[in-house]
Amino acid sequence: PDVLGSGTGHYGHGSIMRGGMAPARSGGIDAAPLAGRSSRAPASFLAPPDSLQEVTRAGNELYKQGRYGEALRHYDRALALCPDSAACRGNRAAALTGLGRLAEALRDCEEAVRLDPASGRAHGRLAALCLRFGMVEKARRQLTLAGNTNQSDPAEWHKLHEVESHLGKCMDARRIGDWKSALREADAAIANGADSSQLLLAMRSESLLRLNKLEDADSTITGLLKLDSASLSSMSTKLSGMVADSYVHVVQAQVNMAFGRFDAAIAIAEKARAIDPANAEVGLILNNMRLVARARAQGNDLFKAGKFAEASIAYGEGLKHESSNPVLYCNRAACWSKLGRWAKAVEDCNEALRIQPSYTKALLRRAASYAKVSNLHMLTCSWLLT
Image 1 (cartoon, one colour):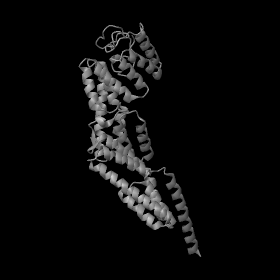
Image 2: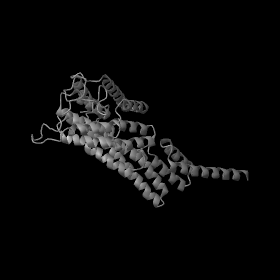
Image 3: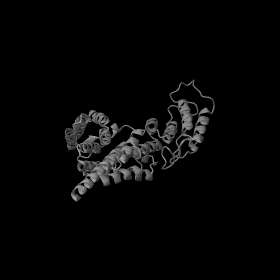
Image 4: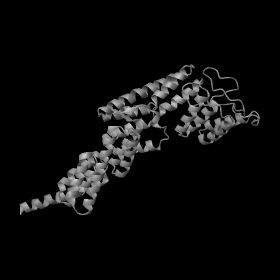
């Protein structure tokens, strides 16, 4: 039957190659299973003649047309007919990849390797998906196994080396606080194939956050949450001693905090602490967030009670723990406005806008404060002239 082969250099979501019932040649396609017979199925079980071939062929035609959902249904039927077939697993993984269901595709590729450990193409497909998730070491192991059967693709090795190099440089830049370089290297690693790596996307989001590009940081972390991603628990990578999964939660929490989503930020930081309870940095970040949230809540209560001077002090306490929080600056500016200290209100609005240039509330509050300062200046000039 026709089976999804990837050909050299197109593992998984790639071209459809024609195959026959003969064993696969080196550099050829995956060997097709015997029609209608599973090696684990009872001997009495026989599918209708040519049903496996017809189902697979129909799925391949749909796949070539980009109709991955319909192709997947046919590959599911083929897999039901021949559950021990690595080739059927590979077909299904290709359709899942086309649908963006990468975590499921990864599991099917792992199962294909288990079923046929000698298949270089199965190892290659798995390596390609591992690289997309940023699992560099696992991708290297699978490419090595593919190479043992002379089916390793030099282009895939090149992508692996590029991703590994840029990932290392990104970590180095983050360690010294060079956020422009960290952002550049994260983008380069993603462009070279690690487009579904939660770790790289989290580093990209953190870099944008530190560069005061809050909207971009938020959209990046939101996109990360929508990914069909494999678990980070299998990754050995650590950042500043944090396990990868904990780090991703920490970045999510920090982005939420910057946008004033204090309760959500603390809840996510608590998840990071549960994942990595012994890490001192995670504990410090969580503690700071709790102090900032408490200061903001106290300030809000005092402001509602009309105690504007006390509220400004409370917001200032929060800024001691998180000096780049635009919400606290904007809230304190509101206190200065109520106290008639317009110049101070302008200063705090400027700080909020330096961190988040599109912060609408800070823009409006600054405009109102500028108007008051201007009116006061005009009144002073009028008094001096008289």
